[in-house]
Image (cartoon, rainbow, N blue to C red; front, side, top):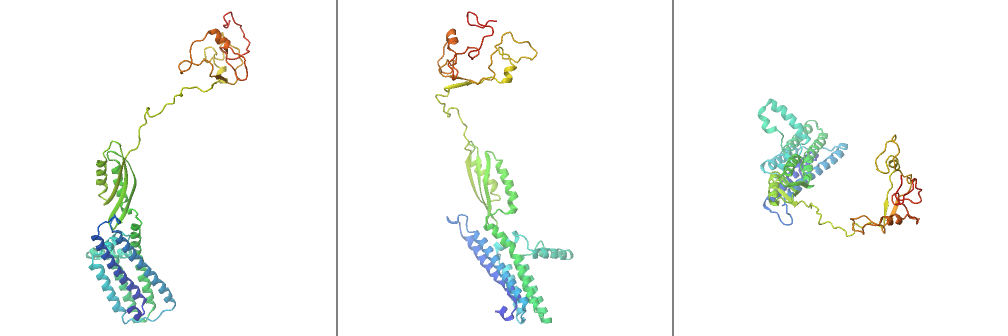
Length: 411
């Protein structure tokens, strides 16, 4: 009612801070309600996130009010109305008293924590620079202005100071445009003060890990990974459950011979110093050593196929090796005493059938055969029905030296 009677948009912007103070009182009531409530099966982590949600909603509504003030101020710059100063100064002091009483007389735990944990606003930074200069002259004021002032008290005092300047300029020079300028300044200060708190409470609602505890968490996880019996720490997730309350869950893989309860006690003892609500999942190593008895052996593993291929020696090796002793021969050495002039360098490999005599020791038919039957039997070449000599494995090869009566090569 006073804002409409004075037609001052600056006083309206300052009144939005009073509405924000009312929401802060509601948040304080929610905080006391959360302290009395206990976790339930539906809300297993408790009701602390209601505080975070209340702070987030209050700061966002204050920023929306600041945006509305900026919109109306832009319209007033085009056509500035007349401002009545009859209740302007009175309304300023009434609103200042109510704001300071609300913020200083009641211990509002959620907003007190957010104001300290969130990043500083641009108004706090400028006032901090000015406070250092003043405290350099008057050291006794360092306990009030340093390290940084309460953002809510600061914005209340700055808004009241802007309204006092507006009242004086209108009373002296009838400069009505200063009312719009003061409204823009109060709206910008409100938005700049509430924005860091909205960001901080929003990150808590998104279950993100606080940046200031990441280094401590990494150190504790390294200590846990070095505990006796611990093989691996994985799937770790830590988040802020409420203001000042950290929750987390982690999976720990241990050795098969390790004591689960002992490892669980050590891990909980290390992490509980930082994480108050902790869930640890212990599981043993599932690696199994393979044994020979568990591998089935086929009955026919030693059975040979129907055809066996005997590879021929390579061309280069055949030229440089002795056919009798299978040792490399020097190019300058004389020809060996015994040699077989057999044109078998480019002949394809020979395929043997399973019906032939097989080596001893493979579970096949074995036994000694007459020497003459071996010579007359020969080895079959696919595509031909001729017999071959026993030593060379080729047929129709002219004997260079002939044979004696026993069928052996003659020198």
